[in-house]
Length: 123
Image 1: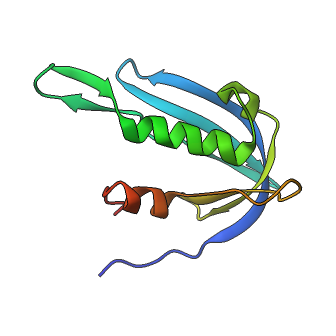
Image 2: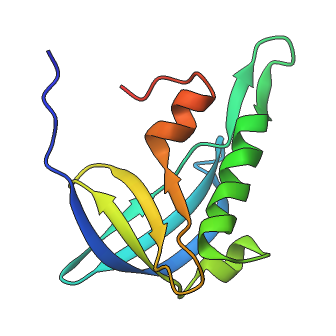
Image 3: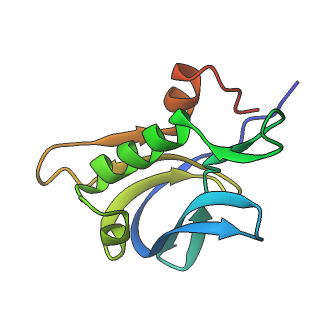
């Protein structure tokens, strides 16, 4: 039986937002959040290994994640996420939800909902 961690909702500032080819293998969307007294990274993987092609390839899921994140932050370029202020629901290991501050309408990226929609397990 898995144990649920206590989630905290905090205001966070984005210190860095990039698309990175991490360790020369995985493509990730890397977002670094700073909270009062700490920080945390969020790095969804944007590709997967394709056996037929014998290499990693981007996915429709990845494009959807990038679009949804940009929508939450209200930006037209991923790099413009840097400096934005949002609500982040997290524990010490995972970020579960990112919400706009609501000044121009509430927008939400809920990782569990996105994964469920795409039929991808989060455990």
